[in-house]
Image (cartoon, rainbow, N blue to C red):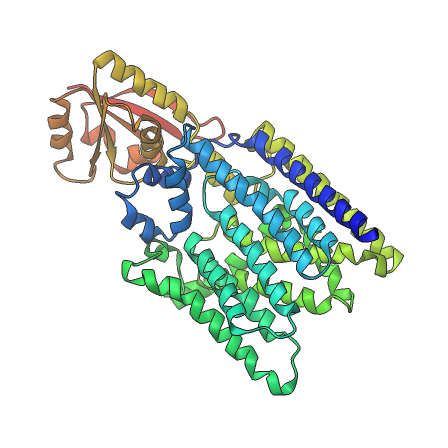
Length: 490
């Protein structure tokens, strides 16, 4: 009877958790305008499989395949892409709950899911059509299977191979997913075993590693993830040593604001409890190794890169809260206060984000990318409407774009891709004969080109192309960034 009641309570708590998740996510689905990386993935998805080589080179295979499948739905491509990330965020909550079941502490999984829902970084990236939410969801299931492996009395190699296959899947979602191998590896290495069986630890680790690397080896001839090479600074050791301190500082800032710090402190209190200390060490070490790997090799880091780290840390926090009854009264009070702070901070962030992301307490890096610079797609809808109007008035037009894949070029093509009145042409604006190429195209039909403020300077538009006349401009409401529309008018 008690078991049935407990199961009903667990299901009710999970249902409430799912409702809370949707309440904090769906109202803000379109709060942030189209982001540059979203435009890249959606554009490739619309032309799949024409740009499949670029998909492989970018190292986000699974995510882009699913986006390509969603392009057949009668929805705004940005809406369908972001809904995919919402589903992935929901799966992360389920994965955390499942992790609790693996250690026979469902309440820990429920509480970890609650903290994930209230995490500002999760709120933002569960609402963007980029692969980070999907990677976090896979991380939650890697964690659950790793914990299951640790609970088994006599695990076999095929169990290790199964976890390795899931890490391989993570690497095909996004290349840094391979660092999630720290979860099963530490599980197996920290597992208590009789002395005569300890050699099996390394056998299990080796099996999982081989299976993990098989996926990368299969795509290695196609230079899988090669586009990420410019973000790897480890090849220049002197420069990377200088970057290491900056990277660690940035990661610390992101954890403080976007986890937030109160959740990390809750997780840390578990180290004071002897019953869960081993599990907490495993969770902190796996998260730390992931962060350290990024800090050591990365030349460019963004907060979303460490979203998978939230999974083990928030589960550690869930374990800490679940065991609070066994602690001193003062420690229980501190944990309760920190949980309240975390939830209130998450509620405040979600409200501000839904109201206007520019007013939300975003990290500096996220504000720069999603709100203030050329990567933020404010006014894309107006630009699309303007181009449709020009095409309707002229009968047909050419929309020329520089070769660089910037948002101002990709954004309009996503929504004008099926308009037969508009022809899309890529031009190397740095070529010596670029002016002549544009003149030849303009002789066929009216020619338009959309540029951002940085490109105006970089290509010296006003001097090199005097025939281009500016007809409209759209200013970013939160920065000096401006988008311009030109027409060729000799």
